[in-house]
Image 1 (spheres, rainbow, N blue to C red):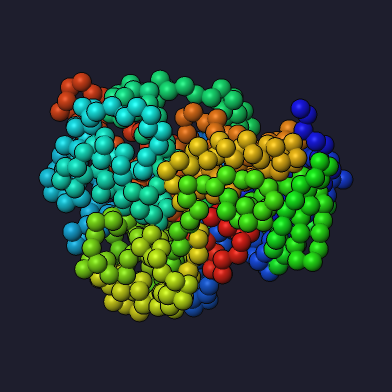
Image 2 (image 1 turned 180 degrees about the horizontal axis):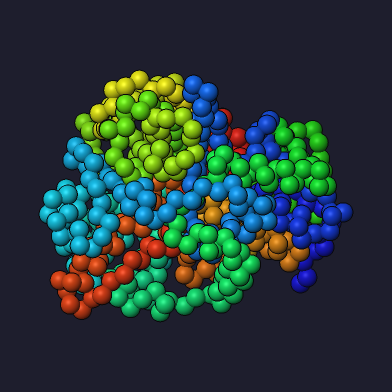
Length: 576
């Protein structure tokens, strides 16, 4: 059945997904087609992308209260290139090469200190013997090819269950390292998240090869690739040839004025282009008739031929009670206390050159009493953004550790935020200097949690959404499929371009046979490229002559840190 004609469009939520969808819809629809963007926040758009500028002795310091850098890889990365080119932002870029210390040096806090992860194969034998976090890693990897095959009928499991089933529990083990990575990605417990939806490459390697290690030996090229994605990637590379060449050899990139540059330019582009922004207007109801979709916002009702919902599954269900929508396996999202700190230059000797460090689940209260998840060394991560001299850090606390706290207890943590962060950097890094600038913001429900069975939920949701007016409703955002900025841009782009075809927004998520990369947020993705598991796999290839390994995480994408420094609003809940 043909999709209904697009006569008017409403976008619920102005996260990066919703803004991107609106931008591409505006580009592909007749200019006479009106677009309306509903945002519950009174002034802010861009979801969790927010940058603030500060002055220190008349010089600038930038704080990112969400994502701070992007990685130029994969199809989703190319979609972001396309948006940057269309918005004319090439001259605003700051590029960080793979040779920079922040791209080469990653740390994990373990056994009372920072454990530097090796970045080269030759460094592994010594590191495996001397770095506490790596002890037992090689034996865990060597065990994996001989693990029992996946139980028949098992369609999904938690990350922790998968890792222990495949790699066993030996010494520190793979699961300890991955718990740190998951802290950086989802601020979550690896025993609660779906491996199939968060580390799909691991699941696919076992599916096609019976073993992660054997799969890496055989090469990911043996896993079928979706022809549509291959074609799209080729077209985008050609279309954005100059940016692709510019990004060659780069690890991450950002903008001179911070990542909010992207959303602010989208806002400027959409303004006065037959686009209406309705700030401070939360949508409370959504209903569908054969000819339109009606939105209720306060006392006002408005009908549109099409609606793009940039909201989480549970939010969509709450505003459309008359419409059937399957319940996801997890309706929770992580709440994270994000603390930005700027110290005088005297603190520099305490901060090693590198991107930052993550903290595994196994580190106890005696070493991590404030339940920090990790610290980003922002001064190294995106050099050249600040004109003021000093040391800039971002401390992330809470996540799953605070999931049982009441709203009042969380508010108390926010009030104590700067002191909690300073206590952590004092204990872990030895910084006792008073910061020049300090801001603490509690980002409520900022990172979606993909529970076991999330992929099955998406399949059911796609069938249901397709039936809502025969293609009148589309969904975008991190709550559905991919929490990185690149993922959100890609999802928004697909919907904006495909609106006339009646797309649901879930097609690329479900049809993707080989995910473009492990989903990652904030510091976690930077660790993935040189994740010791990858290096241990290579080392295992030397001691087990059968195997020849390569890096399985080279297509990982960047991720947003938790959200804007404002209260949590229901339609700014796209984590980027």
